[in-house]
Length: 182
Image (cartoon, rainbow, N blue to C red):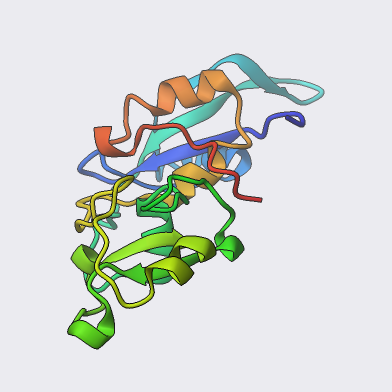
């Protein structure tokens, strides 16, 4: 991995994560009194000619924004929910190598719903055709919480930051993020 980025997990007023921002923006929010820093990086500091600052890695703001899942699923939401893994063979692939599959095919009345959509590799999708297969590597349900920013950012920050962030991420999301996404 390249030099890890310094990023800050942002929690809303209910202590639910809803964003990840660069350290510079986090320091600005802290300085302006618009955010309360809850955790600083244990080893990294930012230095100027006259001063040094601790780097915020978790902060709370008074926003009511949320990452609770509402409404119908999108293609990327399904990819993130299923961790970029084929529901039938278990292969982990990049988003451009996956398809969305209707567990109950559209021809048999299947709808575009959380409970009927799974990620699928092209090979399994071609073999499945219009049959009904039971997904083995995922459970097609509507998630209560989906935070794709975390999955993306977790690839570029250091392990100490991830360790701290995991205390603030709802349990269903804390899992390996090594799903091969480019």
